[in-house]
Image (tube, rainbow, N blue to C red):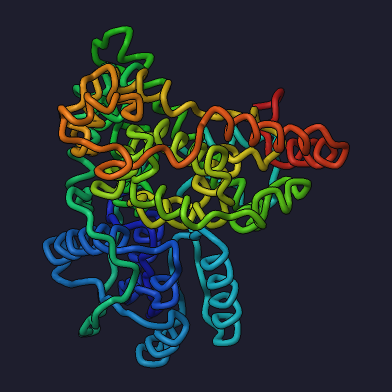
Length: 484
């Protein structure tokens, strides 16, 4: 009888879990999860990620206990060392898992695991769950292959194996600790509840309301961390969307769900980019931009941005909200990155680490591609510099969001809360508020800093080297038109 390890990674569910289904068809199976100690020491890892993982694993273990009277054995340490001990102890012949691609760390880890398994004569059967092309890449057929993958429908549980168990004690897992207040809870039940409420009600005005942090908290699906850690699959979400289309829906809801589904493809498209070019994580996609910001990093600006004390109320409110909740809507993420990259002229390679820790749904493929797009280092995207004042007035016209998350300004009149530095001396006196003491002056003038930044980026963008590189980038990464 074949003995196998079922290695849970970013697929913390039983339903529509191809690795679980295949591993459990026959034989003896040891289900495991490994907290790799080196991964949790990375400067992009945080307690936000750890707590969500623990929540999800606890619930997954409850499902295992209820359905199979067993549990997942969890370990903390060096992945290959742990695997070696288990393979020797249980005489393992196969390892079954989903294929993971997140960043260079996991790429290198999987390469080392593959080499180790080959040396031990272990068969490693891997399945993929995001519909990206891992082998025989054919760009012209990406969309058609992705649609085929996601339209297949969820796989059903079909197990007839004997589960093995191994008693373990979990030491304290060390990672970057962030004190958030309202972090989303992990787990399969949370994912299903969010999906149902989104499809039944919250998606009605998704397209209209996802841009503001005020309405986006409810209007957005909030499924992103569950997709990241695999408590629900993309195919399950797509299947639920298709099912909901059979109901009577308003025109707004039809449009919203169509827009939402397109973002599932968008999610995989950006993971594909990082898979095709892992270097996106640490170097400019367009190398003509090397040296653009690296040698002029202002650590004081960086710290002010990180703690929400830049003097721009809406920027600061968004950062404080993000730090408290581990999530913020996409437009506000883009604004935070744009402000750091242009007005503060911070190198994305450093600024990206802070937001990676804060995003509970941190997905490197999306994270680094978006950071480079919003920083202007791809050479293929429009230079988009967000005006923090305009965004503030557009997305928070009455200053409600600002006053909640920047309470220093809660008594400032609505018309001035976006630009509190315009308060006169007497107005500040009357409010018992001193700009520069209770709340900082703007650390930069966004008009002049934006112009300087735009000129610097455009100067490179117009060079022959940047244009040549941009053409190559489009050939490699852009969505191909024609055959779908």
